[in-house]
Length: 262
Image (cartoon, rainbow, N blue to C red; front, side):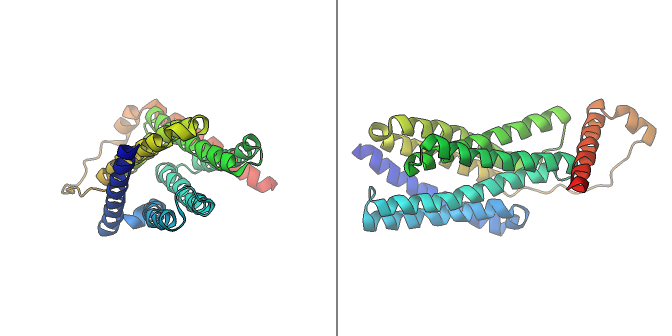
């Protein structure tokens, strides 16, 4: 256990360093404008570490005060994380208003189900409620990102490299966190130190993916595009795009009709 504690402190220091590098890289590359909520998430995550460190130093790791501070800051991080994932989905689906209208409603519905499920399963026991809410939220994020990947693959929707790598980082970390919270709920005491350390390593991996997504890239010299004749373009356009357009229009008409009813 002493070895794990030492590794955990070293991993925390490295995590804070990489998180700080990510925030600075976002500012330097001015990507905090393009990915505002992801920047807020990275900054909130960075600020959480010193707050928790000081609370553990002053009140101890197992104190009730440290426990409350942890879950209060964790709630802020979770809210920023949810907005960051929604921002990624919006960047991909913003051009399809009907589909995005369905997507954000589903995402908001999943968040509501998460809270209700955690409250019912937890039986008004706040530690259990918080653990179930955290696990359910990670599960919802993983499902949302997986659905986004399947959607873009099926309909051949362009997925830019930066948001794609951001989504991959969130998906990998969400998969581990669901497993981590499940193990912590059943075998919390014997394996708490080990799983905290593994969770830190998983977050380090996601940080590396996110830093790679924001890496400097050489911009190719833009040349005037050579457009094909319109009739040839129509003949080469895949039928799957027409299905996507039809789906978007149907959903757009549906939400427009719903708005008129209300």
